[in-house]
Length: 401
Ligand SMILES: Cc1ncc(COP(=O)(O)O)c(C=O)c1O
Image 1 (cartoon, helix red, strand yellow):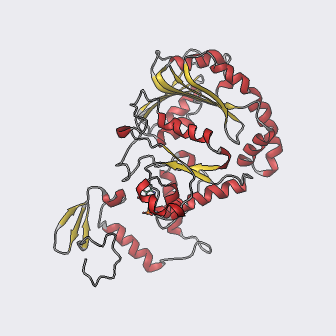
Image 2: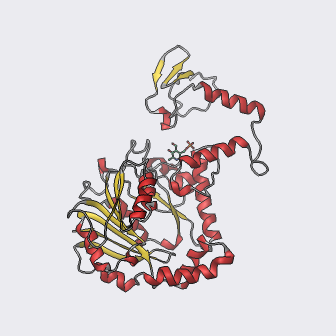
Image 3: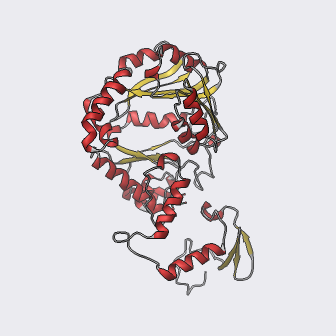
């Protein structure tokens, strides 16, 4: 770097070539030397360099209007881009999803942290502020983003400035933090979040942030693949959410209703790794030891013999596989039922929604003791029954022996 440069460099001891042009995956310096940009810089130049139609669109727009503050205006291009992003986003962002634009990733992380806090303030839970994250993650360079990032060396100099909200293990099979191997590990890294939450002040946790694929701080680490069974999948909403978030999972949904299975199959046409089939929870149409995880969400209250259903879920799990059942909690507090209604229902309908929830949903679910009996004396290690914090739900979980 010439000594008369006005640029503050990332490294004062390094000489930087002058980049003048980009072509696809190449960056060209002022001497004509070409550099293969194999990673798209910080894995963010996914469309390549020097894309003329993008440059043209930017020039055209900025010559009409470059900036109008969002406190006072919306604009057609921003609306169009927001619609486009929602169409690409996982299905639970639609309908009714909204996009908030920021100037970059760090600001997006800061905004997400603030949004999580604001959500809890407005839903009557002011004690929630901590955002839990994973070690060796990267969420940006600003102070809030560094607080939730987990690169120990990068955090070290700024430690006094950063809040300590808690970090859990990364999902990193190449150097497993637990010295285990997939699939026998039982996805110990996922349980680490559970363990952390039960050991720390869970009532102050506002959110969990993580990179589905960790970038440069872990070398593009993807989570392991595996097979998941969802029993009582209904129209497949949860399966499709899972498939969108974890495209490396093979997911099977089973439901007693042929109509629901037809609906779910139609919805899953763009997810080749997902399939749905008709089947009874009490006699699952799969061999023993078949799946890495077996889950059921808000379905067991409909099973005529819940004990037989749980037996079947465990039977089709491979040893070390994960069992997770979520269901409405008949023994939940009135405050938790009210909080759930407040989240989902507009004010004028809340009283009636609360009555319906307590009678027709929670009233048919297990209470804490029923749930404990369901997993007692099973082929499970770490069998657990717990109330989901501030929700009228029970979570039953365990690892098959
Ligand atoms: C997951 C994640 N979050 C946030 C950021 C920060 O983005 P920016 O550099 O635009 O501030 C990055 C950047 O690589 C990232 O990978």
